[in-house]
Image (cartoon, rainbow, N blue to C red; front, side):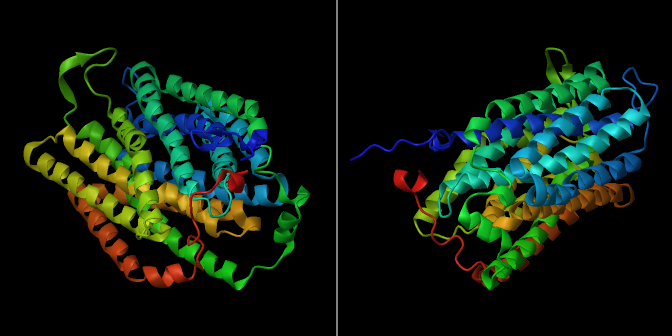
Length: 462
């Protein structure tokens, strides 16, 4: 048999294109900066101005309102970010522009002035909008249609997101809470600068992905840019938009992590240990609980992806839509543990840490069934010329979910945490079950987009 020599952009590592790992580390550092800042944002807003580490002294309601608007706008900005990539720059250059804007934004946040606070948030919103949808679209571009490795590749990429989130919650969270909020913001900026540097160094492995279609010399790509949408493509877009409703519901619940659950960990959870830890003593910082989700993803990510791939190869039910519906139901179930925590607090005046741990475990398994799967699903169903734009809409739906999370968090002051957590659990499970009833009809509209997935030979991937 003749050996197949692959060009540089096709080199593989651990069974996947090397370019995947370039994007992995870029996204890892971007998420380090974003989640690090997010872990301390609400805590900074509600910290009293008279404390040793003074914050802005806002009420919980005011802080959660800003948190909801900010996290919504971060993801809604993905729509113009995706459109700019599709129409003018291509994904590769758009990621570069986004990275630069993020470095500026996090650096400005380190300045202790209100103009810097709002300006920094503005730069971060624009930067995430340019980077987030386009780097995800580039991951899909590394794999040919029908390559069963695509879902696994997105899960590996997703693990990169959560390595960054895990490290940032511990490192940036500790620096922000213990040494000063603005030191934490500045540290997040350093992380993004590292991500931007390695993205530039790794360009040789990304030569054939993320380029602007308008300047493409590939005939099929040029044709896709000018050709009207077919009925099959229109049907697939319909399915995508319906799946986006699942996304809004999921993130509306899940994003209580950075808001209501973050405040709950800080104010109503017994975080005292019977022993001391270096640098922090015997009280666990509230921001550390933000790292649980990321830690669980790192440990469980490849196992969950491998489970679904094995089911697919055995011919068992494992469609993207089924996985997303199941993910919503599992995540919703996790909120019953927060109901138990709230019940314990109402009776004893404090709640145990293990309720948060169990809630984050279920939330993580649900997330692994919906979030990386949704990213992969979009690259399978979206028309080529609208790839980044549809990815941008997905992240915008994530943003709307974040805003819903803010509204729900604010409602706790009126209805109480027990009612809010229980209501979220019941609604997510019921909504997931409702969509499951229509799953087969919806999957028929994909026109077999996932039917031909298989393990590809070296000749096919070359």
